[in-house]
Structures are given as C-alpha cells and as structure tokens.
Length: 237
Ligand SMILES: NC(=O)c1ccc[n+]([C@@H]2O[C@H](COP(=O)([O-])OP(=O)(O)OC[C@H]3O[C@@H](n4cnc5c(N)ncnc54)[C@H](OP(=O)(O)O)[C@@H]3O)[C@@H](O)[C@H]2O)c1
Image (tube, rainbow, N blue to C red; front, top):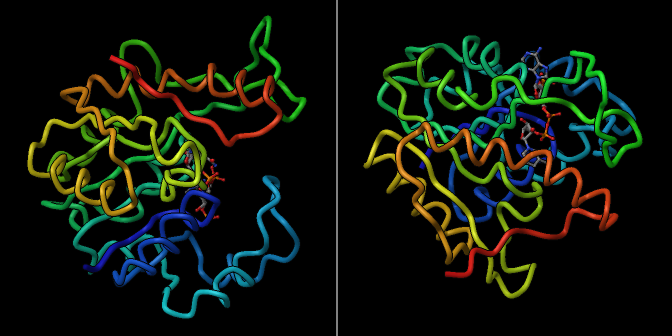
C-alpha cells in the first residue's frame, strides 16, 4: 500500500521504517525536503540528522507534505501537535479526502506560560495541552478536513514502542483507537495488528481522543520518574 508518513521526527521515522519493512511504499512528508536534508547534527530530541537516517532506508522517499499525501492511500500524522493543522493544510484537504488519517500527535503547547508549571523530563517546564478537555487535536483535524477519516491512536506511548510493541513485556500492553469512521478504524486496527499489537481497545467516537490526548501529563511524569520511555499502560479488566 502507498502510505504517507507526515513528519520527520522520531515518530515519523519509526512508522516509516516499520512500514517499509512490512513491504509498503512509504513517502515521508516534510515542509521543505531540501532544508530537511541539509540539517546537520542531532535535533533537540537527540535524533540523528534526517539525511543520515534516510540513507539507511533507501526504499523510503522524502517529499513535501502535499506531494507525499497526493498518491497515498493511507496517511499518518506524526507532526508536532501545535503545528499539525498547518502541516495538514499544507498536505491539502483534497489529498486527504476519503482516506484514513492516523493521528499520533499530541497537542503540546510549549509557548503559553503557566503559573505553576510541571517539570518535564528534560528539565524545562512541561508543555500544556491545547486543545484540552472540551476538544482534541484529533477533532480539530477532523473538522478542518471533513472528508478525511481521522483515527486517533498510538499517541499514548513512545515512538519506538508504537511500531514494535513486542519489545516491551512480550507485547502484553494496551493501545487505543478513537474515530467516527468504522472502516477507517478497521484499517488502523489492521495496521496496529501488523505492528504486533494484540490488546487494542476501541474507545468509540473521536471525542474519546480527548482522553488519550490527556494522558500526556501522566506520560511526562512517568518518563521523569522512571528516567526512560520504555513503558506503557496495560488495561487489566
Ligand atoms: N516522540 C515520541 O516518542 C512521541 C510519543 C507520542 C506522541 N508523540 C507525538 O507525535 C508527534 C511527532 O513527534 P516527534 O517527536 O516525532 O516529532 P516532532 O519534533 O514533535 O515533530 C516533527 C515534525 O513536525 C513538523 N513541524 C514542526 N514545525 C512545523 C510547522 N511550523 N509547520 C508544519 N510542520 C511542522 C516538522 O516538519 P519538518 O519535517 O519540515 O521539520 C516535523 O516533520 C508529536 O505530535 C508528538 O507530540 C511523540
């Protein structure tokens, strides 16, 4: 299948590499391929320059958001949450129409000052969520692109675990799905199963993405307390 992974960070790379391994035709979307390839040194999250990563994955193509989205049969949003609406606008509503759009982003806002900030694992104030409570990024994306079929999933855990759940606790942990579109949810569920997910909980419609997006403060507190991101939630019922 032709899949566009929108985002060049750790999440985009994890999905692109795994999907390539699974035999899909993968294009990674970025704002400006030339600028992305010209970056040197590790990024703020410690990821190697994208060009070095791409050289190790010769089957994967890099293109502007719109060019990546145009041919894709399925898309994954792996862009910085507070910029996802801009990235998807650049991808083009027409290029998303009728397609499953898996949204793995978290609406982190690093810019709004908070009276009593929570510390982040990086020693700086933790980001706040915007939107939160009465709305979610997933719903904003769905409203902005009514013909796309948005599925919120995988945003509750670290990039390296999203596509390789078996590397933690023999894969015995949980991932969630939220969407207004039954067929898209089934397609996303099949992709999760291909990644190795066994415990997939369908939370219901896209309003339930508010809950999974709001896991972020707990996720950051756990990362800080444990000193690593190799953990996930397991729902025992
Ligand atoms: N890292 C994790 O373990 C993890 C876990 C759970 C959820 N998430 C969520 O997954 C998403 C991706 O995270 P990440 O760590 O892989 O990468 P990231 O650094 O949060 O995002 C990188 C991507 O955002 C794009 N971007 C940045 N500013 C932009 C702007 N102004 N307009 C359009 N696009 C812009 C970048 O475009 P260029 O390619 O052009 O630079 C790049 O593709 C985020 O929403 C994050 O909260 C991450």
